[in-house]
Length: 355
Ligand code: FES
Image (cartoon, rainbow, N blue to C red; front, side, top):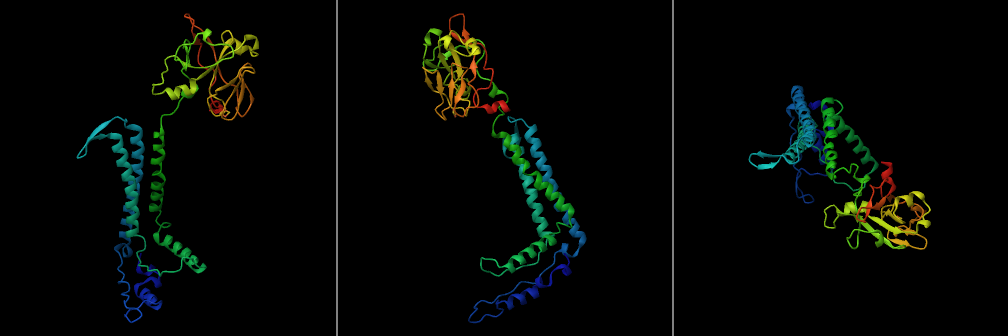
């Protein structure tokens, strides 16, 4: 900026006179024991008086913002391309994880370059006129607000953001790209579920194991009117994925008199009146645990959804959206109850069906 561009009232001599006129003192007296030395003479920077130097600074700032953009792209490329387990030797740190190193380095460069570009821009191209502001009451008067507005507009003008399009565009590019680093890291919140929510451990030939005794169930173990909970053979409570799998595979086994079963498919998918339904409520997934043997109703304790187990486990009361999925069962060559396949519909809350 040339000295002609500097507003009159901001020139040092004018400023000092202005300050003195508003109560600052140049000579100490009894009321003001400390003299105000005033502002030192303003020295113009090379960029204020030499347009070629200003252009050089502009290119430097643009280069820094461009470096930030490249580093952000490098961050994303590293995240995609470098295997998680890759180890590299970096002097003088030693052996470190290559992905962490690349992500840290590129993100650091991206942020540093934005900061360095902004600082260089402010130090060399934005107005460096010294400004002193009086303390004033916290509440701003309408005049003050109008002045702030005017100052802001002047600051924007002096920053050259409208005139120096190269800086403005590269800065906007850098600021737009750098948040992508955070978006990319969201991928680390955990593995994608894929189709795992649509399948359970049940498969043809899997025996039904009593969850209380851990023993495979035979038809004669299930009395008419009783309620038994079962899980797939091979699943152990000590397994790392036990909670995940049992949350999908838990079964509710009841035995009805075949003549009491109204739904033909339900009767066909059972064995001599023994029927197996998912224990997971189709409302929001609570485990169903209450059974009323006279009415054949199963009740979810969370929001009282009630399912008629003699009629395809359809919903007869409550907020559940659909019937409990039924598992096809039979008996294997050794006389144990076994699954004849997986559930044919997703277990639990209905939102899986909308995916
Ligand atoms: S979870 Fe079963 S009724 Fe709400």
